[in-house]
Length: 97
Image (cartoon, rainbow, N blue to C red; front, side, top):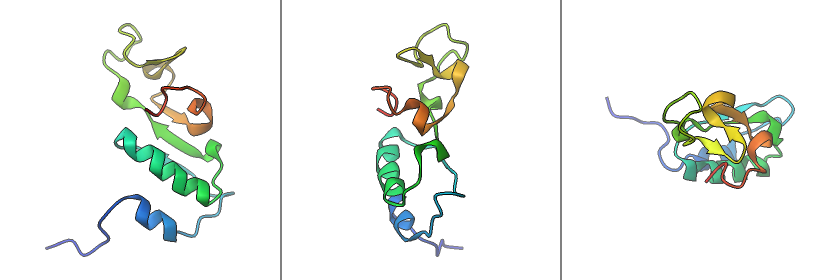
């Protein structure tokens, strides 16, 4: 049976959502390039960054903090995450790149 739902960029349906910033929580996982554009759309809806969670699992290798691959400044994603509130990592220069 062919798909008859929406297709396209993930940001398109976000524009038409009725989001209550006081009760909405968002979890993002996917390619890093997507995060930037989804966050811009969520910002347009007034969603606070402490209600947006991002998955940084893509950075992990060993999973125990030994290899340093997941390190972003002083944060080890494998030990302190891999899921973070956007408000916790938005000041880390490499966090979403």
